[in-house]
Image 1 (tube, helix red, strand yellow):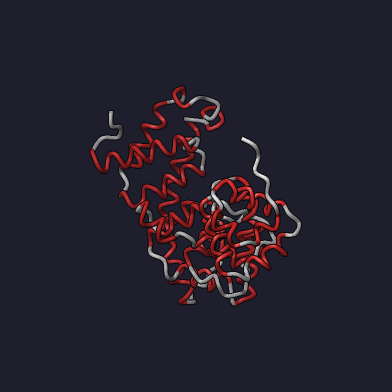
Image 2 (tube, helix red, strand yellow):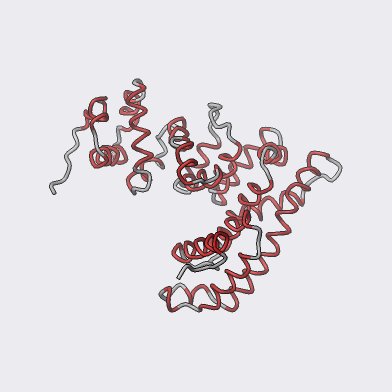
Length: 302
């Protein structure tokens, strides 16, 4: 098959997007991911609502393509467009996958770089008003970006006050998921809590809300250290799946299955980030086995 040739002006023509299939759309978005004139194209593209809608639609359809990841992480991509991308297809995804909003947001946010996540968090257009999205963007930050974000909270009225506002509308399950997904954030917030003023009712309320998560994390932190001692990650990752120590997966299944089902996915994420679950293949096997047990009382259906 001959390569698709993209004429740059086609990107600005509504009829082109209307008739474009995924391959043509992918080639167009790939062109935009690499052009120095991105701002010029977007300025024209976004003057026409139909063009904008097609553009975001294909960003969503092709979201797993490397070219799209490059495009959505460009520092000259407008934040409102990024937010449109993050929310596009939200209801459809929830309905099709029976997924919860936090799982959907986490999947998409993971495609953003730390720098791009920080850009969205520090944007002052007022369009980022979803607390769950804010929190998961925070979990995407590296150490340097955390410092920049928490510095902005300090300037706006205090770090703890800012965190209280972010977490105030979240249920306990979502809070658990946030910290289990990013153990480094847990360490940072724990340090902040040490500095809390125990006479300040806002600080006290925040500490009390977060403390149950910290108790759970301390338990799993101890577990991961024990597992790492008996089943070194550097050894296991060098082996094919069928060659790895089966006792490790047996222990993981036993411990995870003992949890309430609503917390299992959060702990799986934590163990994956801590390298106790070696790779995504193992993660998928464990997730599938736990689901099978909930439905059929058997880990494996064979």
